[in-house]
Length: 365
Image (cartoon, rainbow, N blue to C red; front, top):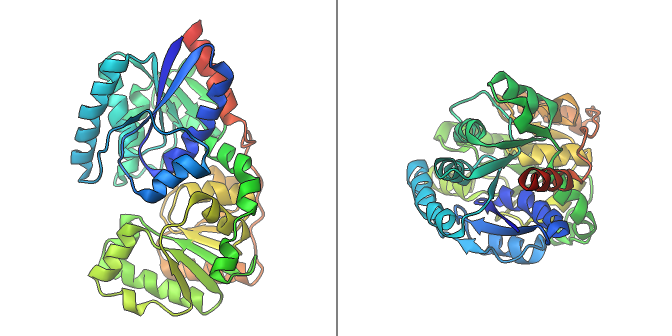
């Protein structure tokens, strides 16, 4: 019996590990799959995602790390995760995505001689000012198995000198969760709760430092949201970082009454909003992928994206951080000039099945 520990730390990780855990249930005679939650992000909503919405077991290990600077958080995770690895002696650790927990746990396993698999490997924004880019680079150079979501990720790894026999193109586990939970997503009553009609509202999410950390950029963002609010109803689930900065700079009172402001929204409700939005304006990574699969118009307010296939194949447009251009692009979409898109190859809801089959075969050979 082989022992595998999958690591989750922040909200996007949960949606990626859930289908992996489900897929491992086909190998319970060969593999014991355990989940370690570092607690990098933890609140009641996260617990709800775990226990109720994503049909996952309670994490077998909870490190309770919490906040702090990038250095503090990474160091605490490494110290506590090392204890788990030494006591449990796993045959493999699986990390997903690009958060601090991903990099920290990979460094620990690498130094202890335990094999690591990185799910969602090879994505690159080519912007080292993004903390996530550093996490991706470090994780991929140390990991033993690298599972990619798109062809460009595969090419990035080869260009960086990663051996091709370590790389496996398996598709996107985030889409696995979306496909699996579509029936539940459709049952959401969030549109009724917020007084919205399908296809007649804009969904906005913003949390990246470049957009919300300075008074100047946040003032411009408030202007954009108010302008969009004069065209359509705008749903704006406010990330804690954004909310704190709005209050800090005294901008919370400047938001238009046309904006529907909410706290962060649960996974199923948020995907219901995503599916039925006329337009999404965001700086998120995962939203670019989900909107592409759902065929919903998406504008990404960033100068780069580590998910280029959403632009090359999907309905995403990478407009940049000039909010005048963002508003112009948004108005064109609202006037009916929509980008045609398709679903990327292997984004079929079966990525986790491919990943677990490869993992089991690699460990048992």
